[in-house]
Length: 188
Image 1 (cartoon, rainbow, N blue to C red):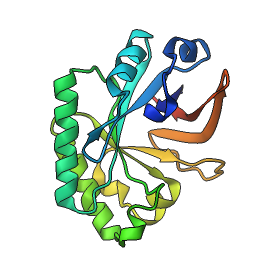
Image 2: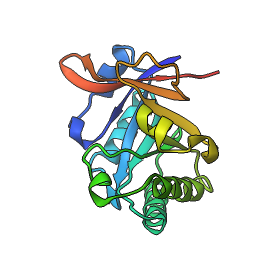
Image 3: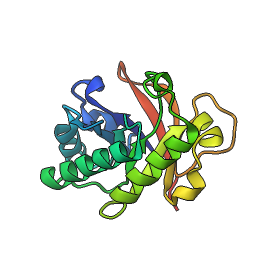
């Protein structure tokens, strides 16, 4: 097992050497959301790689249709290609609804599955791609088994045994006064 965090522009400037000195072994960096680049993406990936951490990425989707999911997937692939960043871990599609965007627009489980298949299918042509979602979405909305990809499950304070390829076990990991999402990567 490896221990890590995920970060985005919401974490501000991150000291990756400090994270490494406190036991962090990998980081998943938000690359983008919708068709927008995370303001700190390039700096976070470069700084994490320089600190010697394993690095992956995630894309937060605002797609409400398969067509929009394809646009977002193309945007993400272009971003990875044009920045030339090195990612030793997969890129994850963040399919959740933390801000109620999807729920407020009446998106169905069937449509969510179409979005996931379209996005992941396109990204997998060039990059290792996986799915991030809450335990609730993974067990009641998303047909993750049909996607054929790594699964990163958010299960805070959960005693359930589904953990996937990677498990986000908390959103309150404190490292020297800064709060991060804590993750465990299961490797063979």
